[in-house]
Amino acid sequence: MPASAFSTATSFSRVSISIAGTRCVDNFSVVSGNHRLKFGGSFLLRDGYFDSKTFFGGRFGFGTLPGALVSPQLATTSINAIQSLDLGLPQSYQQGFGDGIVGGKLPYYSVYGQDTWKALPNLTFNYGLRYEIDTRREPLRTFYGNYGPRVGFAWDPYSEGKTIIRGGYGMFYAQIPFVIDYVVQSLNEIDGFRQIPQVLTTINTAGAQSAVNIFRTLRAQGVIGIPDTVRTITPADLAQFGINVSQTGPRNPLTVLFRTDPTYRNPRAQQGSIGFEQEVTAGTSFSASYVWALTQFITRARDINLRNRPIGPRGIREWGAFAPDCAGAGIVNCFINPTLFQEIIYESAASANYNGLLIEFQSQIGRNFAIAGNYTLSEANDQVTDYNSDFRAFDQTFDDPEYSLSAFHQKHKFVIYSVITTPWRNPVLRDWTFTPIIRANSGRPFNLLAGADVNGDRSTNGDRPLLRLNGLDQGAIPRNVGKGPGFMTVDLRVMRRFAFNENMSLDLTAEAFNLFNRLNFSSVNNTVGTFWPTTVDVRGNHDVGPSGPLGFTSAFDPRRIQLGAKFRF
Image (cartoon, rainbow, N blue to C red; front, side, top):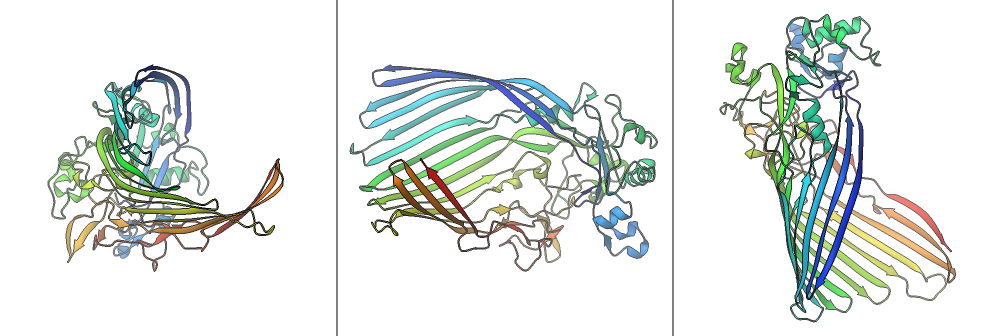
Protein backbone atom coordinates (compact mmCIF):
# COMPACT_ATOMS: atom_id res chain seq x y z
CA MET A 1 0.00 0.00 0.00
CA PRO A 2 1.55 3.37 -0.92
CA ALA A 3 1.75 5.56 2.12
CA SER A 4 1.71 9.30 2.61
CA ALA A 5 -0.25 11.92 4.50
CA PHE A 6 -3.88 11.07 5.13
CA SER A 7 -6.87 13.29 4.56
CA THR A 8 -9.97 12.18 6.39
CA ALA A 9 -13.38 11.81 4.80
CA THR A 10 -15.16 10.96 8.05
CA SER A 11 -14.52 11.77 11.69
CA PHE A 12 -11.88 9.75 13.53
CA SER A 13 -12.95 9.50 17.15
CA ARG A 14 -14.59 11.28 20.04
CA VAL A 15 -12.83 11.51 23.36
CA SER A 16 -14.31 12.07 26.81
CA ILE A 17 -11.96 12.00 29.79
CA SER A 18 -12.85 12.35 33.45
CA ILE A 19 -10.33 12.02 36.28
CA ALA A 20 -11.48 12.59 39.84
CA GLY A 21 -9.67 11.80 43.06
CA THR A 22 -9.83 11.78 46.84
CA ARG A 23 -6.57 12.64 48.57
CA CYS A 24 -5.49 12.06 52.18
CA VAL A 25 -2.11 13.30 53.44
CA ASP A 26 -0.58 13.00 56.90
CA ASN A 27 2.85 14.08 58.19
CA PHE A 28 4.53 14.37 61.58
CA SER A 29 7.95 15.50 62.80
CA VAL A 30 10.25 14.60 65.68
CA VAL A 31 13.18 16.76 66.83
CA SER A 32 15.96 14.99 68.75
CA GLY A 33 19.26 16.79 69.32
CA ASN A 34 20.79 17.69 65.96
CA HIS A 35 18.27 15.54 64.08
CA ARG A 36 14.92 16.58 62.71
CA LEU A 37 12.98 13.50 61.65
CA LYS A 38 9.91 13.69 59.47
CA PHE A 39 7.54 10.91 58.44
CA GLY A 40 4.43 10.91 56.37
CA GLY A 41 2.30 9.34 53.72
CA SER A 42 -0.47 10.01 51.27
CA PHE A 43 -3.34 8.15 49.68
CA LEU A 44 -4.98 9.23 46.45
CA LEU A 45 -7.99 7.40 45.07
CA ARG A 46 -8.08 8.20 41.36
CA ASP A 47 -11.39 7.59 39.66
CA GLY A 48 -10.56 7.36 35.95
CA TYR A 49 -13.10 7.36 33.12
CA PHE A 50 -12.05 7.32 29.49
CA ASP A 51 -14.45 7.24 26.55
CA SER A 52 -12.36 7.46 23.40
CA LYS A 53 -14.47 5.60 20.81
CA THR A 54 -11.25 4.94 18.94
CA PHE A 55 -11.81 4.64 15.17
CA PHE A 56 -15.61 4.73 15.74
CA GLY A 57 -16.17 7.55 13.28
CA GLY A 58 -14.45 5.56 10.54
CA ARG A 59 -11.85 7.01 8.21
CA PHE A 60 -10.77 6.68 4.62
CA GLY A 61 -7.17 7.67 3.98
CA PHE A 62 -6.22 9.45 0.77
CA GLY A 63 -2.67 10.20 -0.35
CA THR A 64 -0.26 10.22 -3.26
CA LEU A 65 -0.74 7.22 -5.59
CA PRO A 66 0.97 5.98 -8.77
CA GLY A 67 -0.71 7.36 -11.88
CA ALA A 68 -0.76 3.85 -13.38
CA LEU A 69 -3.70 3.03 -11.09
CA VAL A 70 -5.77 5.37 -13.25
CA SER A 71 -4.34 4.78 -16.71
CA PRO A 72 -1.22 3.25 -18.34
CA GLN A 73 -0.64 6.64 -19.96
CA LEU A 74 0.00 8.07 -16.45
CA ALA A 75 2.58 5.45 -15.45
CA THR A 76 5.38 8.00 -15.20
CA THR A 77 3.52 10.38 -12.94
CA SER A 78 1.45 10.33 -9.74
CA ILE A 79 -1.84 11.68 -8.44
CA ASN A 80 -2.09 13.66 -5.20
CA ALA A 81 -4.45 13.18 -2.25
CA ILE A 82 -7.15 15.53 -3.60
CA GLN A 83 -7.12 13.78 -6.96
CA SER A 84 -7.31 10.40 -5.20
CA LEU A 85 -10.41 11.61 -3.35
CA ASP A 86 -12.03 12.88 -6.56
CA LEU A 87 -11.39 9.53 -8.24
CA GLY A 88 -12.60 7.50 -5.26
CA LEU A 89 -9.25 5.80 -4.63
CA PRO A 90 -8.67 5.62 -0.86
CA GLN A 91 -5.44 4.04 0.31
CA SER A 92 -7.20 2.53 3.34
CA TYR A 93 -10.43 2.23 5.28
CA GLN A 94 -10.41 1.76 9.06
CA GLN A 95 -13.21 1.72 11.62
CA GLY A 96 -13.85 0.46 15.15
CA PHE A 97 -17.06 -0.71 16.79
CA GLY A 98 -18.18 -1.98 20.19
CA ASP A 99 -17.63 -0.35 23.58
CA GLY A 100 -15.26 2.60 23.93
CA ILE A 101 -15.52 3.08 27.70
CA VAL A 102 -12.83 2.07 30.18
CA GLY A 103 -13.00 3.18 33.81
CA GLY A 104 -11.73 2.19 37.20
CA LYS A 105 -10.65 3.29 40.64
CA LEU A 106 -6.86 3.33 40.84
CA PRO A 107 -5.39 3.94 44.33
CA TYR A 108 -2.01 5.63 44.64
CA TYR A 109 -0.05 5.19 47.88
CA SER A 110 3.16 6.77 49.14
CA VAL A 111 5.07 6.77 52.43
CA TYR A 112 8.35 8.43 53.31
CA GLY A 113 10.80 9.08 56.09
CA GLN A 114 13.58 11.66 56.17
CA ASP A 115 16.13 13.15 58.52
CA THR A 116 17.79 16.57 58.57
CA TRP A 117 21.02 16.18 60.49
CA LYS A 118 23.05 19.23 61.47
CA ALA A 119 26.36 17.37 61.77
CA LEU A 120 28.37 20.57 62.29
CA PRO A 121 27.39 24.22 62.66
CA ASN A 122 28.36 24.69 59.00
CA LEU A 123 27.38 21.27 57.59
CA THR A 124 23.89 19.81 57.19
CA PHE A 125 22.85 16.47 55.72
CA ASN A 126 19.44 15.45 54.43
CA TYR A 127 18.60 11.83 53.68
CA GLY A 128 15.48 9.75 53.40
CA LEU A 129 13.50 7.10 51.59
CA ARG A 130 10.18 7.24 49.75
CA TYR A 131 8.05 4.30 48.61
CA GLU A 132 5.20 4.53 46.09
CA ILE A 133 2.59 2.15 44.69
CA ASP A 134 0.90 3.28 41.48
CA THR A 135 -2.02 0.84 41.14
CA ARG A 136 -2.95 0.06 37.54
CA ARG A 137 -5.90 -1.67 35.93
CA GLU A 138 -5.33 -5.15 34.54
CA PRO A 139 -3.94 -6.23 32.13
CA LEU A 140 -1.46 -3.45 32.91
CA ARG A 141 0.98 -4.48 35.60
CA THR A 142 1.20 -2.78 38.99
CA PHE A 143 4.87 -2.48 39.90
CA TYR A 144 5.80 -2.78 43.57
CA GLY A 145 9.47 -1.80 43.44
CA ASN A 146 9.26 2.01 43.43
CA TYR A 147 11.78 2.80 46.18
CA GLY A 148 13.19 6.31 46.06
CA PRO A 149 16.25 7.08 48.20
CA ARG A 150 17.22 10.76 48.57
CA VAL A 151 20.37 12.32 49.99
CA GLY A 152 21.72 15.88 50.06
CA PHE A 153 24.06 18.22 51.87
CA ALA A 154 24.75 21.91 52.39
CA TRP A 155 28.21 23.09 53.51
CA ASP A 156 29.51 26.54 54.40
CA PRO A 157 33.29 25.83 54.28
CA TYR A 158 34.37 29.14 55.84
CA SER A 159 31.46 29.54 58.27
CA GLU A 160 31.03 33.12 57.07
CA GLY A 161 27.66 32.84 55.34
CA LYS A 162 29.20 33.96 52.02
CA THR A 163 30.02 30.61 50.42
CA ILE A 164 27.72 27.62 50.19
CA ILE A 165 28.30 24.26 48.50
CA ARG A 166 25.27 22.05 47.88
CA GLY A 167 24.78 18.62 46.41
CA GLY A 168 22.18 15.92 46.20
CA TYR A 169 20.97 12.72 44.60
CA GLY A 170 17.59 11.05 44.39
CA MET A 171 15.37 8.56 42.58
CA PHE A 172 11.96 9.68 41.37
CA TYR A 173 9.08 7.82 39.71
CA ALA A 174 6.40 8.99 37.28
CA GLN A 175 2.78 7.94 37.45
CA ILE A 176 1.53 6.06 34.40
CA PRO A 177 -1.10 7.98 32.38
CA PHE A 178 -4.54 6.37 32.33
CA VAL A 179 -4.51 6.34 28.53
CA ILE A 180 -2.14 3.34 28.70
CA ASP A 181 -4.69 1.44 30.81
CA TYR A 182 -7.35 2.41 28.32
CA VAL A 183 -5.52 1.28 25.20
CA VAL A 184 -4.37 -2.11 26.51
CA GLN A 185 -7.93 -2.81 27.64
CA SER A 186 -10.07 -1.50 24.79
CA LEU A 187 -7.79 -2.28 21.83
CA ASN A 188 -6.50 -5.60 23.13
CA GLU A 189 -7.80 -9.15 22.82
CA ILE A 190 -8.24 -10.62 26.31
CA ASP A 191 -9.34 -14.25 26.62
CA GLY A 192 -10.65 -14.11 23.07
CA PHE A 193 -12.73 -10.93 23.65
CA ARG A 194 -12.16 -7.67 21.77
CA GLN A 195 -13.76 -4.63 23.39
CA ILE A 196 -13.31 -2.64 20.17
CA PRO A 197 -13.32 -4.94 17.11
CA GLN A 198 -11.80 -3.25 14.09
CA VAL A 199 -12.05 -3.27 10.32
CA LEU A 200 -9.05 -2.34 8.20
CA THR A 201 -8.76 -2.80 4.45
CA THR A 202 -6.47 -1.21 1.89
CA ILE A 203 -6.40 -0.36 -1.78
CA ASN A 204 -4.52 -3.64 -2.29
CA THR A 205 -7.13 -5.81 -0.57
CA ALA A 206 -8.59 -8.16 -3.14
CA GLY A 207 -12.24 -8.43 -4.11
CA ALA A 208 -15.28 -6.84 -2.52
CA GLN A 209 -13.42 -5.90 0.68
CA SER A 210 -11.07 -3.50 -1.10
CA ALA A 211 -11.09 -0.01 0.44
CA VAL A 212 -11.85 1.35 -3.03
CA ASN A 213 -14.93 -0.86 -3.49
CA ILE A 214 -16.23 -0.08 0.01
CA PHE A 215 -15.84 3.67 -0.49
CA ARG A 216 -17.45 3.78 -3.94
CA THR A 217 -20.32 1.49 -2.99
CA LEU A 218 -21.23 3.30 0.23
CA ARG A 219 -20.95 6.66 -1.49
CA ALA A 220 -23.29 5.51 -4.26
CA GLN A 221 -25.72 4.24 -1.60
CA GLY A 222 -25.71 7.64 0.12
CA VAL A 223 -24.05 6.43 3.30
CA ILE A 224 -20.92 8.53 2.69
CA GLY A 225 -21.29 12.20 1.85
CA ILE A 226 -18.62 14.67 0.69
CA PRO A 227 -17.79 17.15 2.09
CA ASP A 228 -20.32 16.44 4.89
CA THR A 229 -20.74 13.01 6.44
CA VAL A 230 -24.28 11.64 6.08
CA ARG A 231 -24.05 9.12 8.93
CA THR A 232 -21.65 6.71 10.55
CA ILE A 233 -21.01 3.42 8.77
CA THR A 234 -22.63 0.52 10.66
CA PRO A 235 -21.82 -3.23 10.79
CA ALA A 236 -24.96 -3.81 8.70
CA ASP A 237 -23.48 -1.63 5.93
CA LEU A 238 -20.35 -3.81 5.87
CA ALA A 239 -22.18 -7.15 5.75
CA GLN A 240 -22.66 -6.77 1.97
CA PHE A 241 -18.86 -6.93 1.59
CA GLY A 242 -18.55 -10.14 3.59
CA ILE A 243 -17.18 -8.28 6.63
CA ASN A 244 -18.47 -9.57 9.96
CA VAL A 245 -17.98 -7.29 12.98
CA SER A 246 -17.79 -9.31 16.18
CA GLN A 247 -16.18 -8.96 19.61
CA THR A 248 -15.49 -12.70 19.69
CA GLY A 249 -14.57 -15.37 17.18
CA PRO A 250 -12.25 -14.90 14.20
CA ARG A 251 -10.69 -11.47 13.82
CA ASN A 252 -11.14 -9.42 10.71
CA PRO A 253 -7.96 -9.32 8.61
CA LEU A 254 -5.42 -6.60 9.38
CA THR A 255 -6.60 -6.06 12.96
CA VAL A 256 -4.41 -3.79 15.13
CA LEU A 257 -3.89 -5.01 18.71
CA PHE A 258 -2.28 -3.21 21.65
CA ARG A 259 -0.74 -5.17 24.50
CA THR A 260 1.51 -4.53 27.47
CA ASP A 261 4.83 -6.13 28.28
CA PRO A 262 4.67 -8.43 31.36
CA THR A 263 7.62 -6.51 32.87
CA TYR A 264 6.04 -3.07 32.36
CA ARG A 265 6.82 -0.62 35.17
CA ASN A 266 6.86 3.07 36.10
CA PRO A 267 9.53 5.28 34.53
CA ARG A 268 12.35 6.10 36.94
CA ALA A 269 14.63 9.14 36.98
CA GLN A 270 17.91 9.32 38.85
CA GLN A 271 18.89 12.94 39.42
CA GLY A 272 22.04 14.41 40.88
CA SER A 273 23.45 17.91 41.30
CA ILE A 274 26.47 19.70 42.73
CA GLY A 275 27.01 23.43 42.92
CA PHE A 276 28.26 26.39 44.84
CA GLU A 277 27.17 29.96 45.45
CA GLN A 278 29.54 32.79 46.37
CA GLU A 279 28.80 36.29 47.60
CA VAL A 280 31.29 38.51 45.78
CA THR A 281 30.37 41.82 47.37
CA ALA A 282 27.39 43.02 49.37
CA GLY A 283 24.38 42.51 47.08
CA THR A 284 26.31 40.64 44.39
CA SER A 285 26.51 36.85 44.14
CA PHE A 286 27.61 34.23 41.63
CA SER A 287 26.70 30.55 41.42
CA ALA A 288 27.51 27.55 39.25
CA SER A 289 25.91 24.13 39.34
CA TYR A 290 25.99 20.88 37.42
CA VAL A 291 22.83 18.84 36.97
CA TRP A 292 22.61 15.25 35.75
CA ALA A 293 19.54 13.12 35.12
CA LEU A 294 19.23 9.56 33.86
CA THR A 295 15.69 8.44 33.07
CA GLN A 296 15.07 4.72 32.60
CA PHE A 297 12.11 2.48 31.82
CA ILE A 298 10.48 5.09 29.60
CA THR A 299 7.39 3.79 27.81
CA ARG A 300 7.94 2.88 24.18
CA ALA A 301 5.52 1.42 21.62
CA ARG A 302 6.86 -1.34 19.35
CA ASP A 303 5.35 -3.72 16.80
CA ILE A 304 6.15 -7.27 17.94
CA ASN A 305 4.50 -8.81 14.85
CA LEU A 306 7.67 -8.13 12.83
CA ARG A 307 10.17 -10.94 12.34
CA ASN A 308 13.88 -10.25 12.66
CA ARG A 309 15.23 -9.63 9.19
CA PRO A 310 18.73 -9.45 7.68
CA ILE A 311 20.13 -6.15 6.46
CA GLY A 312 19.13 -5.75 2.80
CA PRO A 313 20.95 -4.14 -0.13
CA ARG A 314 19.64 -0.69 0.83
CA GLY A 315 21.37 -0.89 4.21
CA ILE A 316 18.16 -1.51 6.20
CA ARG A 317 15.93 -4.40 7.25
CA GLU A 318 12.93 -4.71 4.95
CA TRP A 319 9.47 -6.29 5.17
CA GLY A 320 6.39 -6.60 2.99
CA ALA A 321 6.57 -5.51 -0.62
CA PHE A 322 10.21 -4.42 -0.20
CA ALA A 323 11.35 -7.99 0.65
CA PRO A 324 11.11 -10.43 -2.30
CA ASP A 325 10.99 -13.47 -0.01
CA CYS A 326 7.84 -12.06 1.65
CA ALA A 327 5.68 -12.22 -1.48
CA GLY A 328 2.63 -14.47 -1.55
CA ALA A 329 2.78 -17.38 0.86
CA GLY A 330 6.23 -16.19 1.95
CA ILE A 331 4.64 -13.36 3.95
CA VAL A 332 5.32 -15.46 7.06
CA ASN A 333 9.00 -14.61 6.51
CA CYS A 334 8.16 -11.00 7.42
CA PHE A 335 5.26 -11.12 9.88
CA ILE A 336 4.73 -13.53 12.75
CA ASN A 337 0.95 -13.41 12.24
CA PRO A 338 0.23 -12.20 8.68
CA THR A 339 -3.48 -11.69 9.47
CA LEU A 340 -2.59 -8.94 11.97
CA PHE A 341 -1.75 -5.50 10.62
CA GLN A 342 0.20 -4.58 13.76
CA GLU A 343 0.59 -5.96 17.28
CA ILE A 344 1.82 -3.06 19.37
CA ILE A 345 3.32 -3.64 22.78
CA TYR A 346 3.95 -0.99 25.41
CA GLU A 347 7.27 -1.73 27.09
CA SER A 348 9.47 0.01 29.63
CA ALA A 349 12.53 -0.09 27.42
CA ALA A 350 13.69 3.43 26.51
CA SER A 351 16.06 5.76 28.34
CA ALA A 352 17.14 9.40 28.36
CA ASN A 353 20.13 11.28 29.72
CA TYR A 354 20.64 14.97 30.54
CA ASN A 355 23.76 16.89 31.53
CA GLY A 356 23.66 20.62 32.23
CA LEU A 357 25.92 23.37 33.53
CA LEU A 358 24.07 26.39 34.92
CA ILE A 359 25.85 29.67 35.69
CA GLU A 360 23.94 32.50 37.40
CA PHE A 361 24.68 35.94 38.78
CA GLN A 362 22.68 38.67 40.44
CA SER A 363 23.60 42.09 41.69
CA GLN A 364 21.81 44.89 43.49
CA ILE A 365 23.60 48.19 42.92
CA GLY A 366 22.14 50.81 45.17
CA ARG A 367 18.40 51.23 45.45
CA ASN A 368 17.71 51.91 41.79
CA PHE A 369 19.46 49.23 39.77
CA ALA A 370 19.39 45.43 39.89
CA ILE A 371 20.62 42.99 37.26
CA ALA A 372 20.57 39.21 37.02
CA GLY A 373 21.19 36.58 34.40
CA ASN A 374 21.90 32.95 33.74
CA TYR A 375 23.50 30.78 31.09
CA THR A 376 22.89 27.06 30.56
CA LEU A 377 25.15 24.73 28.60
CA SER A 378 23.46 21.36 28.27
CA GLU A 379 22.95 18.21 26.27
CA ALA A 380 19.85 15.99 26.28
CA ASN A 381 19.74 12.56 24.64
CA ASP A 382 17.02 9.94 24.45
CA GLN A 383 15.72 6.94 22.51
CA VAL A 384 12.12 8.01 22.07
CA THR A 385 10.12 11.25 22.22
CA ASP A 386 6.75 9.80 23.21
CA TYR A 387 4.93 6.48 23.30
CA ASN A 388 2.36 7.12 20.59
CA SER A 389 2.64 5.73 17.07
CA ASP A 390 4.13 8.93 15.63
CA PHE A 391 7.39 8.21 17.45
CA ARG A 392 7.94 4.49 16.88
CA ALA A 393 11.44 3.46 15.83
CA PHE A 394 12.41 3.28 12.16
CA ASP A 395 13.56 -0.32 12.73
CA GLN A 396 11.32 -1.74 15.46
CA THR A 397 13.44 -4.89 15.78
CA PHE A 398 16.68 -3.00 16.48
CA ASP A 399 16.41 0.34 18.24
CA ASP A 400 20.07 1.17 19.02
CA PRO A 401 20.24 3.78 16.18
CA GLU A 402 17.34 5.64 17.82
CA TYR A 403 19.56 7.02 20.60
CA SER A 404 20.28 10.64 19.67
CA LEU A 405 19.81 14.23 20.73
CA SER A 406 16.37 14.81 22.20
CA ALA A 407 13.73 16.83 20.41
CA PHE A 408 13.87 19.33 23.33
CA HIS A 409 17.70 19.56 23.44
CA GLN A 410 19.01 23.13 23.60
CA LYS A 411 22.79 23.40 23.84
CA HIS A 412 22.88 27.09 24.77
CA LYS A 413 20.33 29.17 26.66
CA PHE A 414 20.91 32.70 27.90
CA VAL A 415 18.70 35.11 29.88
CA ILE A 416 19.59 38.51 31.32
CA TYR A 417 17.23 41.01 32.90
CA SER A 418 17.35 44.10 35.06
CA VAL A 419 15.10 46.40 37.06
CA ILE A 420 15.86 50.12 36.82
CA THR A 421 14.01 52.78 38.79
CA THR A 422 14.55 56.48 38.29
CA PRO A 423 16.30 58.15 41.24
CA TRP A 424 15.19 61.73 40.60
CA ARG A 425 12.72 63.78 42.59
CA ASN A 426 11.44 65.69 39.57
CA PRO A 427 7.65 65.13 39.36
CA VAL A 428 7.96 64.09 35.71
CA LEU A 429 11.04 61.84 35.98
CA ARG A 430 10.47 60.14 39.32
CA ASP A 431 8.74 56.79 39.97
CA TRP A 432 9.53 55.25 36.58
CA THR A 433 10.51 51.57 36.44
CA PHE A 434 12.14 49.95 33.40
CA THR A 435 12.49 46.15 33.14
CA PRO A 436 14.31 44.91 30.01
CA ILE A 437 14.69 41.18 29.38
CA ILE A 438 16.98 39.61 26.77
CA ARG A 439 16.50 35.94 25.89
CA ALA A 440 18.45 33.81 23.43
CA ASN A 441 18.84 30.11 22.84
CA SER A 442 20.11 27.72 20.22
CA GLY A 443 17.64 25.76 18.12
CA ARG A 444 16.21 22.37 18.97
CA PRO A 445 16.86 19.32 16.76
CA PHE A 446 14.20 17.97 14.46
CA ASN A 447 13.70 14.58 12.86
CA LEU A 448 13.79 14.10 9.10
CA LEU A 449 10.77 12.06 7.98
CA ALA A 450 10.16 10.29 4.69
CA GLY A 451 6.37 10.58 4.77
CA ALA A 452 6.16 7.00 3.47
CA ASP A 453 6.67 3.42 4.60
CA VAL A 454 10.32 3.12 3.61
CA ASN A 455 11.01 -0.38 4.98
CA GLY A 456 7.62 -2.03 4.47
CA ASP A 457 6.90 -2.63 8.17
CA ARG A 458 3.34 -1.20 7.83
CA SER A 459 4.31 1.90 9.82
CA THR A 460 4.74 5.26 8.14
CA ASN A 461 4.98 7.91 10.85
CA GLY A 462 8.46 7.15 12.20
CA ASP A 463 10.19 6.28 8.93
CA ARG A 464 13.19 8.40 8.00
CA PRO A 465 14.66 8.86 4.50
CA LEU A 466 17.52 6.75 3.24
CA LEU A 467 20.92 8.38 2.92
CA ARG A 468 21.77 8.21 -0.79
CA LEU A 469 25.37 8.99 -1.78
CA ASN A 470 26.66 8.62 -5.33
CA GLY A 471 23.53 6.73 -6.30
CA LEU A 472 23.92 4.15 -3.49
CA ASP A 473 21.68 3.81 -0.44
CA GLN A 474 23.59 3.90 2.86
CA GLY A 475 20.83 3.02 5.33
CA ALA A 476 18.45 5.32 7.18
CA ILE A 477 19.31 8.90 8.15
CA PRO A 478 20.06 9.07 11.91
CA ARG A 479 17.33 10.36 14.20
CA ASN A 480 17.05 14.11 14.97
CA VAL A 481 19.90 15.28 12.71
CA GLY A 482 18.07 18.48 11.74
CA LYS A 483 19.20 21.72 13.40
CA GLY A 484 16.22 23.89 14.29
CA PRO A 485 16.22 27.71 14.13
CA GLY A 486 17.69 29.69 17.01
CA PHE A 487 15.74 32.22 19.02
CA MET A 488 16.47 35.71 20.33
CA THR A 489 14.20 38.43 21.59
CA VAL A 490 14.16 41.58 23.70
CA ASP A 491 11.16 42.38 25.90
CA LEU A 492 10.61 45.61 27.81
CA ARG A 493 8.23 46.65 30.55
CA VAL A 494 7.82 50.31 31.54
CA MET A 495 5.78 51.35 34.57
CA ARG A 496 4.94 54.76 36.01
CA ARG A 497 3.45 54.96 39.49
CA PHE A 498 1.31 57.90 40.59
CA ALA A 499 0.99 57.95 44.38
CA PHE A 500 -1.94 59.98 45.71
CA ASN A 501 -1.43 59.10 49.37
CA GLU A 502 -0.08 56.24 51.44
CA ASN A 503 -2.99 53.96 50.57
CA MET A 504 -3.89 55.00 47.07
CA SER A 505 -1.87 54.83 43.83
CA LEU A 506 -2.22 54.27 40.10
CA ASP A 507 0.21 52.12 38.06
CA LEU A 508 0.32 52.67 34.30
CA THR A 509 2.27 50.04 32.34
CA ALA A 510 3.42 49.51 28.77
CA GLU A 511 4.85 46.13 27.76
CA ALA A 512 6.58 45.30 24.51
CA PHE A 513 7.30 41.69 23.54
CA ASN A 514 9.87 41.10 20.80
CA LEU A 515 10.61 44.82 20.92
CA PHE A 516 12.75 44.87 17.77
CA ASN A 517 10.33 42.65 15.83
CA ARG A 518 12.90 39.96 15.11
CA LEU A 519 11.66 37.09 12.92
CA ASN A 520 12.01 33.90 14.99
CA PHE A 521 11.01 30.79 13.10
CA SER A 522 9.54 28.05 15.28
CA SER A 523 9.13 24.97 13.08
CA VAL A 524 10.38 23.36 9.89
CA ASN A 525 8.66 21.10 7.39
CA ASN A 526 10.60 17.94 8.20
CA THR A 527 8.94 15.65 5.64
CA VAL A 528 11.58 15.49 2.91
CA GLY A 529 10.88 12.33 0.91
CA THR A 530 12.31 8.84 0.70
CA PHE A 531 15.93 9.82 -0.04
CA TRP A 532 18.21 12.55 1.32
CA PRO A 533 21.81 13.33 0.31
CA THR A 534 23.42 14.45 3.57
CA THR A 535 23.32 14.44 7.37
CA VAL A 536 25.58 17.50 7.68
CA ASP A 537 24.18 20.92 8.61
CA VAL A 538 20.53 20.09 7.85
CA ARG A 539 18.65 23.33 8.53
CA GLY A 540 15.51 25.17 7.50
CA ASN A 541 15.59 26.92 4.15
CA HIS A 542 14.37 30.53 3.74
CA ASP A 543 14.07 30.06 -0.02
CA VAL A 544 11.56 27.20 0.18
CA GLY A 545 7.83 27.60 0.83
CA PRO A 546 6.22 26.00 3.90
CA SER A 547 5.06 22.97 1.86
CA GLY A 548 8.56 22.27 0.52
CA PRO A 549 11.17 20.09 2.26
CA LEU A 550 12.88 22.08 5.04
CA GLY A 551 10.69 25.12 4.46
CA PHE A 552 9.76 27.09 7.58
CA THR A 553 6.14 26.43 8.54
CA SER A 554 5.57 28.81 11.46
CA ALA A 555 7.12 31.59 13.49
CA PHE A 556 6.86 32.96 17.01
CA ASP A 557 4.87 36.12 17.65
CA PRO A 558 5.97 39.40 16.04
CA ARG A 559 6.25 42.55 18.12
CA ARG A 560 3.32 42.96 20.50
CA ILE A 561 2.61 45.98 22.67
CA GLN A 562 0.06 46.05 25.45
CA LEU A 563 -1.01 48.75 27.85
CA GLY A 564 -2.40 48.34 31.34
CA ALA A 565 -3.53 50.21 34.41
CA LYS A 566 -3.84 49.13 38.04
CA PHE A 567 -5.49 51.22 40.71
CA ARG A 568 -4.53 50.46 44.32
CA PHE A 569 -6.59 51.58 47.28
